[in-house]
Image 1: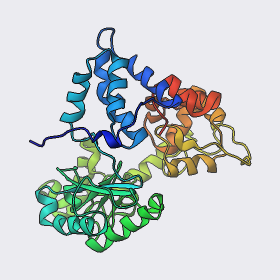
Image 2: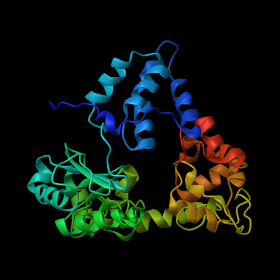
Image 3: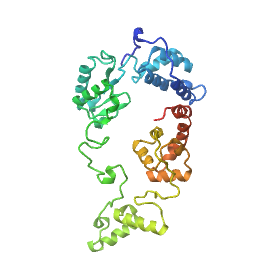
Length: 366
């Protein structure tokens, strides 16, 4: 068990106060807990203090103890127990956490530690001369398949070589950390096999789209009948188990059903762009809203919404149920818009930006 103590008084701040935005967030977080249980907010408040100042100061511990009505020693116990809290100043541009658990160690973590010792400081928890970089060795960070890896603040960098880690450290030191792509540093998708996919390799699956159901067995395997009766056997099997239908069979049946029913859905199952329930689009404004601030909307989805003429929070906030269902079907989300409550998020952002979002939801937008 490590012994963790507060930093020397020489580097401690005389006082601590949350920023205006963080103070609103902190109060909203405290209000989430039942009366008499507000002290349960101690860990999130300590984390927000660390995110604000880079590390947890003695003054921050005292301030949080005061806010929660806790004895100072109780908050100190929490801060010194959990190693996620930094009790000394760390690099202002990068604090590199090198995973040293078995999978990473077997795949070269010791070489990554040598890089940190050479480029930052010979000892962990010490900053470089400029105070911009620091490092430490940590336990498993959950990316064992992509070992070895490091965490820098909230992002992970995986499949590292010593040379690649040196390049990453240099970019953070130069103030270009935002340009470094998180995740695997080799040609792999997330935790997919290195060297390319070995399964789900159809074009739709590789693009992250659900592929059409595949026949699990050939006609001869489906039932024990002579080859001359195989086609009939497969048809009978498909009737009892639709998952056995081939993609061609499923597609032709879907097209026939759509024709009979007068379905307005376009090829591929998406709603037609001519559907009356499609939300009205607008011309791209000079300063479109950042739709990725809505939880559940990433850059790719935001681009698709822009292609549909959706550029502002006000547009999303105005969607009625039928319009939400149309967008949900077009994006193939299966209820995600309702689960993440895009409309409520968009209303808050349209009304007062991030400050209003924090007031309503008690946290920053993504």
